[in-house]
Length: 298
Length: 331
Image 1 (spheres, each protein chain N blue to C red):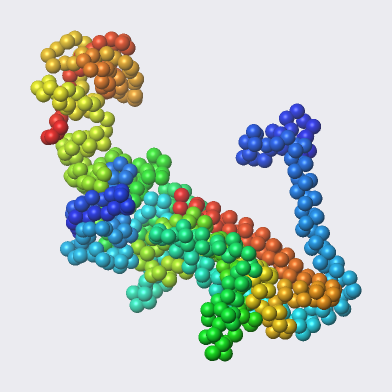
Image 2 (cartoon, each protein chain N blue to C red):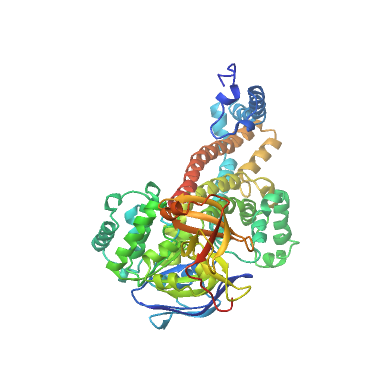
C-alpha cells in the first residue's frame, strides 16, 4: 500500500498468488476496505459496545445484582442444561451423518444432505411450531402425553427438542467436506491391518477430524445457547422454569428493566466473543488438518 | 499362500471393470497385474484384499474359500498407491499399528512390538526416521514405510497397488530392485499392479496382462514379450507397426520398429516408402516412413551406423522389409 506512488503500484503491492489481471487499482481497493470497515463498525462494533455500555451504565453493583438475580440464575442454569444435552446429541448425530455421507455411497444420499440443511432453511419460529403441533395439547401425541402426565411443550423437554432441531446441521456441515476430502484410504489401510470398526474410528478417523469437529461443536454450542425464535414458541416463558437467557433478555426489556436486560444480554455477548476467539484458534488448526491429511497421502 | 480366483466378476453400474476372471497365483510367487488404466487390475487386487466384494465368483486362499471373509481376517498386507499413512502418527507408530490393534490375547508385549518395528525400520533403512511424521518424509521414504507397515503383521499375501506410480523415475528404479530383493528374502506371495510394462518385466516372476476387465495373457516376462497372445498384448508392450501381409490381401501383420530393415534399392517383398522424418535418440535413430502403396505411417529404428551408411535425405524413397511379421488368429 505504501508504494501507491510508484510507476507500477498494482504489481508491487500485489498479494502473492493473485494474478495481476484480478487485482483492482489501489484507489478502488482502499474504497472497498473503507466501505467494509464503516459497515462493520455501524452494524457490529457499535451495537456490541452499546450492550456493555448500557449494562454498566448504573455501575458494577447494579450489573452484578442483575445477573445474580434468582430468575437470571435460573435462566443461566436452564441455558447451560439445554446446551449440555443438545450439543452432545448433535455431536453424535453430526459425526454419524458425516461418516455415512462421506464414506459410503447409497441411493438418496443427496436427499439426506439436503435434509441435514433443513433447519437452516426453515425459520426458527416454524421449527418451534412444528413441535407445538406434534407434542402440544391439540397435537398428534398431545392426548397420550397428557394421559401419562408428561409435559413437552411449555416445559424443558420442548426447549431441548427445539434447540436440537435448530442446531443440528452445524457439526455435520463442518465434517462432511473435511471427511470427503480425506477419503477412505486410511480407514481401508487400518481395516486391512486388522483394526475393528471402533479402533478404526478412534485411532484413525477421529484424530483426522478432531479440529473440524471441535469447530462444529463451538458453533453448535453458540447457537444452542443463543437460540431465541424456536425456543420462544415452545417455552411458555415461565419465569424460573422455562426461561433461557435470550428469553430472559426479552422479558426484562419488555418490563422496562433496561439495565438488567442489557446486563443479561452482555452475558450472551461475552459468549459470542469467547466463541469467536475459540473459532479463530480452531479454524487455523482445521486448515492444518486438511493440509496434513493431504500431505500424509500424496 | 496360494491364491485362486474363479469366475470373478465385478461391475459398478454399467461399467464392468472385472469380467469373469480366473487366475491362480502360486505360493511365494511375485506376480504383476499389467494393463492400461480401467483394465480392472486394481479392482482385482482390492477383491483379493476383501476391500471389494465380487458380484460373482470365488476367492480361495490355499484352497480354502475366502470370498466371504472380512478384509480384517484375510491376513493380507496392502500397500496403497498414495501410501495412506496415518498422518497424525509417527513412522514408528504407523508400522506398529497392525500389532497394537490386535485383540489382547494375540497382541505382542511392548518390548516385542519395539523389537519388530525396529527390525522392519532397519529392513527399509529408515531407522533414523522413527520419530518423524509422514509429511516430513519424501515420497520414496513414505512408500517404504507403507511397505514396512504392511509387513509388520506378517501377512500371508502382499498386495501393492501401483506402488511406484507417484515417484520420480530414479527413485522408482531403485525401489523396484529393492522390492525384488526384499521378495527374494521374505518370500511372501506378492501381487502388484502396474501400468508400466518395464516395471512389470523387471520385477515379476509372471506377468498377467489385462484389458477391459479380462486377462489377455499370463506368462513369464520373456514369454509374454516374445510370444504375445493377442494384438492387444503386442501393441501394449511397445511401439508396433501394422504392415500388409504379402500372402493375404487385406490382412495385416505386426512388427516392432527395430524388426524392419531399411534398403537403399528395391528387392522382392520390400515395400517402397518415403522418409518423412529422422531423429537420433541416444545410440539409435528413429525414422518415420510413409508407405507409397497406402500412405500409412511406419516407424523404424536403426543403428546410427546404418543410418549413416544409407545416407537417406528426408523425402527420399527407401524399401522396407520386416525381418519378422507376426499374425494373430482371427485377424
